[in-house]
View 1: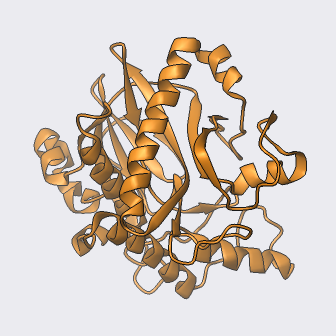
View 2: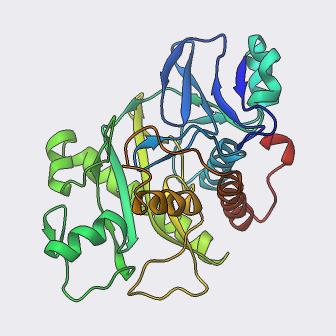
Length: 318
């Protein structure tokens, strides 16, 4: 069974959580991960949403389908370039392989991905093409990123040429922490560290060029990799609004924050609640108005449409 939101409530029609007849490996902020035998995983992206490290009560319709299908779209583009873990993101194909999921086929449509299981590297591989987010905060304070000096005189949202490979720890709770590249070598060895950086740069460069042709700047993004039978695989989500900052190229100007194709309407509303003293930043967050939920959903769908050139099948968002 799945747990949708009742009609009439903010986020109506969205999936809050899944409950499938498979062994549950973990339930993250967004994804529910199930074991399929010993060598595969079924990853189900719910419509749960988090902001400021708080999971909100109201889900965002279509979010899970956007994350899954956009990742699948990118991985298909990367076939033959970068090895990855996706077996299928087509619910019909998945149910054909796992007939016990037939009663859940409609709920899984669009949001489920069957993947190869891999040993996950314990680092986030972040590539920054522009100076923003935590990198800008550290640079503004100390002129560094993860303690390593950057050139002087850079402005907020400045293009970084070449892009920076900026690894981070994988935090179970709270924020990931930027770490020096040398720390990755210490943890994984020089050969694996160099290969992770090479693959990260290759995927970022490909995604940056594809997105630029569609009027989108990839400000930064994070990748995860795993090892399977000695081969490095690109895993988890790839170049989505949750793992990346997408900015509209039209109107871009360094020296200030940029609008983005993600949960910005949700963050802006919560920031307003915090500034007004109606929220202290801890869980639970205040209930989201329906118009904020709808505006956030529209941002995700717009990012999918702009990048892929097609609308997300509405049947996958209900």
